[in-house]
Length: 273
Image (cartoon, rainbow, N blue to C red):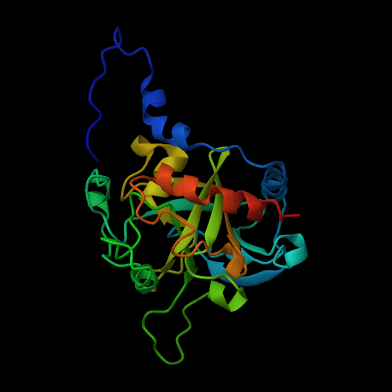
């Protein structure tokens, strides 16, 4: 991460904390009342998922293997959503994903500290099929994407690795997701999934999305958000997929991309009950 340059106090009275949070504040969207109600209920002491779709995941390496994909609201009448939850009112943290494209000028080299960056994401073929000039994959800096689902890349017969396929429950690749973080909601997409190169983890998003949540200065390729207070919401059905023309896939910033899907996001969130 590039060092923060000193600021002359007489010229810039803003505090360093304020400066580091500018990008997050600029992208902040108020949390709709029904989504806030859901968030508060899930964070309440003792809250537990009743309809566990799959459990046995870690929010952090070395932590408890007690995090789950929850289907308490998977029925269309209650929103048709799947989210990540932990024990006793915990949700998930936010690790940083730097996979996919990292082209300039958005690349500020904060991903340089990542030790497991890959040049391609799970749905690069679908992105390529959109036939958008100069676009072959999502961009870790400019696309607010969530890493959701867990696959076993070894493909070994009889493997006991814990997996979860969102598509099995109606979540479509590159569909819209809503992320509640730092007292705001960010509208992004399901853009990648976890592989089996380490323990089965949950709670990860592109560096662009993480920066929108917590500020550029708070995260880098090797530093995320540790608290299990982030809500990742995925929506079932083809109606959650913006498609080639429903999102600004060539956006120059997270702010531009989010603006292009906000209407869809607000409409989907309105159905959560």
